[in-house]
Length: 469
Image 1 (cartoon, rainbow, N blue to C red):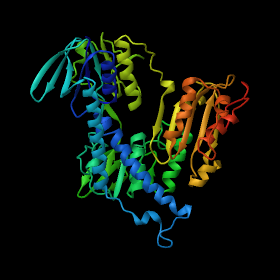
Image 2 (image 1 turned 135 degrees about the vertical axis):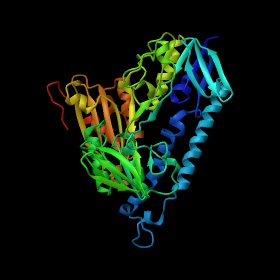
Image 3 (image 1 turned 45 degrees about the horizontal axis):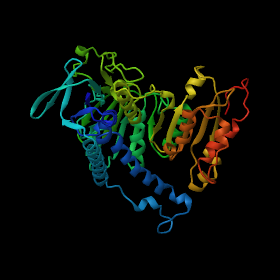
């Protein structure tokens, strides 16, 4: 029987363990915090649970426009208040329950779980460190899935009370009076959106001209406009260089000499890979200058028999990608049929309000000439179902090849973009044409109708036509 040792119990690790067990491996998984890792315990599951709660408040806030009243002209959301202690208790309870469910399934599949840390001892053994000591495990196959840790600035050290990382937010018992969010990438924008919806006064410090600089420019512009219209303060082209606690306040210093004062500060300035102290260099596992493990399209590292998956590889910081990397690693190492990881088919979502979902080729790639495509962008405010629900912001954008009409990318900006992108994701994966997408039946009225309509507008585009909207 093949001995498989996995270091890290996040999506990359536990999904790999399930596949390895299915293929007959003798599987041991080492995890120091709890099964599910950061994704389940401090990142994806908790943050999206918090955001789901914030979405309810957003819906209540818009109820007045739909004609819903409480006590005359009183807005419906004014009848509700946020008990952040109860919200966070529920968030952590759900995360723990998810971790327990995953652990139970792993054990049922015969996976041995070790609570502790792991490091490589060459390429054929792993040293597991636990509260009871160490154990040297034989390993024919090793998978590194150790994830990342929030990046901390020396001049803005988190204290877990006033200056916080996103893993520490769930310790708050009261809604911050004024939350300063440093960083306007996905994490910063999501938490800024959620806490603003819950009723906190939010200041978002962005070093760029617009929030979400890594996303579709049109989509990010919509989100920024919604943020500003709802009363959020956005400090664009402003770089935070320090944060300090002064009494019951946090003072954030900007590079241009200005200061911003709030009750709390969330530092969302990226993350660093958990790859130190694992014995990687000694085993011949190469990392790049930033510390991320170098892998190929089937998750192999530079050391024989050693694979890596998830955020520690720096490939794509998504739980779905981590899980697929882990599965691919086991399929490849254990001799099952496998194809290389194809990032062109990855669907991603930003859980702001509204959400941004993307798949395939991006607008930036088209604009720079890296991809040749036609595009159509259809605003959602023309959609009948959107009007019924009071949705005024958002759009559907589709990219297709000029001659064949094959769909190669898409963007959806909407309250439930994460659900709507699946159709475009399928189209990209299966190389469907815009005509095939257009000819599929959609429910009327529905938001998905705009996807079919956008596809119809791309019918008959010739190779001589430029990208248009």
